[in-house]
Length: 134
Image 1 (tube, rainbow, N blue to C red):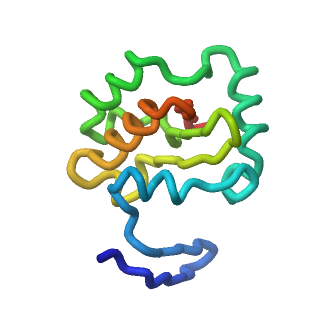
Image 2 (image 1 turned 60 degrees about the horizontal axis):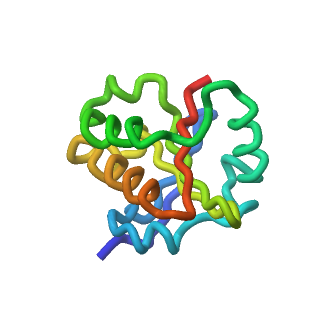
């Protein structure tokens, strides 16, 4: 059973939030999607998608790109330029993100990230975007 305990620590000007373990269960991931305005990193999912679509080459990921992540994304260097994978429902902009920097996503050769990205891609209502590091 996953922990529900959240801790906050501060060292200098760095604040670290530690919370419940992230699930690897896809139906639970879908139920935990943020609403359009509920993601504190990306406050309006529709605006993020519009900005990504305006940026050349930032269209939703293709089948080949998804399969590349799934098959080859087993090591840290693969994600050197990736901030996150942003999975967005095309109808209501509910969203879920996978950051290669999250501990649970790094475990087992990035298994949670690779299978999560693939699972969202296979859902008819979702697009998956790559958000690169600045």
